[in-house]
Image (cartoon, rainbow, N blue to C red; front, top):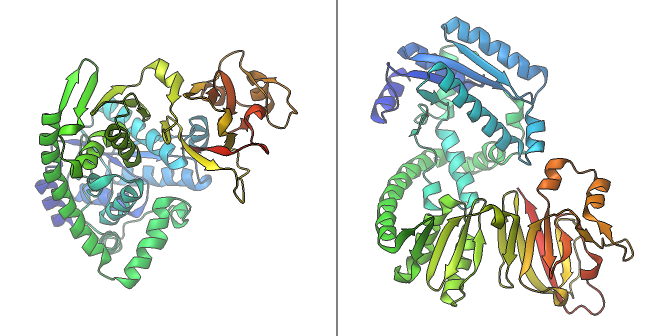
Length: 443
């Protein structure tokens, strides 16, 4: 394993003996093996550990265990702790997303403070396969099939050449102690479900699955590099910058490849493939002035061109939605619009779905943050009005929730406090012919 690691480091130019490396260590078998290997090869290492306080005393015991092991190797030891659940709640994030942000932000601080050149993480070949599956589910395109790179910026992944079984065998042969995070055995998170359920199920039917996937990933990485070069050539011919805007002339892109070229251009700006197909449809139907939003950017259609710009503060506060718009992406979620007949068997009672009388809606609908003085007529209050501020107070919303609350507005009348309550004036009734279903999907 030492020889294989040394070759992998050299082939991928990951690091050398002069580099000062911070090793991210959880206490699990992967990072403990990497720490042992770096010690055997004589690298200059510091150990960084984050206590996410997710498992009570077990989390504290992990930190104590690692402090002792770092001392045995005579490696500097850096540790910190986070109230991860509270951070995730305050920032409307999932636990894993919050933990990732906290972890890498802290690592960057430690690296800058103590002069580390690189951050080493213990991702291995099995993690790579899981990552590719996750990217496929997110719709990341061919570039998502590359998985993780051995080196990206200051982060290196020296164990990507090794399988989990090889790491376990090495740990057993060298009696390397580690601590198991029991939450990894639960399948409530997507990655854990892939690791514990889906991939073992596939492997039970196809024993060579992991080896074949690893081979495929290497091919996809090369294919992506080739495609990247071709895309850059195509975009250089069709794209130009004017001030703060980037303009792409789609009419000059081969029609059968148009969606791929546009998607690979815009995915890094947060746009998804569904939005891209809607952009192209708008262009082909000569619908200029259509707006599409990602978290931080917007696209405007202009004849056969797409104009990319960063969203201004005003645009973030208010977004115009046209009758043909189907999806609007926002910072903390997305809205989906569907015009439908009200003659359906069942209407969901979820607060995340609003059913509005489409004939009472005037376009463009506006999506904006709440303002002081806003009032509406909450469904269920027999036609009585209520100040939005009072409505928030009754729900006991904290400041962050109020600050990020969106209103769906038609002709200056609030028709839905998004994700919470519709306005009585826009409810469906016996005279309703068409229903506008609006679905809020928080992220």
